[in-house]
Length: 171
Figure (cartoon, helix red, strand yellow):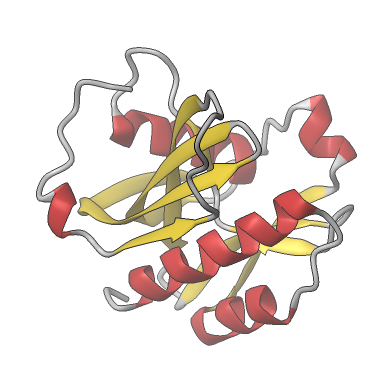
């Protein structure tokens, strides 16, 4: 994980998804998620067409990478947008899925320029990832109404509904 401190992380709203199980050797992964808004009152969501769910922009924090830089990089890769990060970490989730223990830190950002092109990986293209800008109230409705067809999609749905709900408190 990066050396950047997440201020008052113990006091952050936190949701645990899944159950820590005895006897499992978990691989730890640290990630950032971003509630990204524009001046028109819209929020960016990523649709995963293959597994029928919506998620927030974000992904893994690379070795020695600062949380905010990771958030900016992930937003650029998934939406093509450049952003201004706002405030500190607003919420986090802790997931236990198979042998993965993932902690996701959520931040808010405001779009500066959304004319860039996403740089999706081959796997993300195969998963049918595509970003959309939707009104704030519709973003939560889309995530809630989605019926993921995979275990991963169900975990992401629970995680990102919680994080978006926390992020909308600051909108």
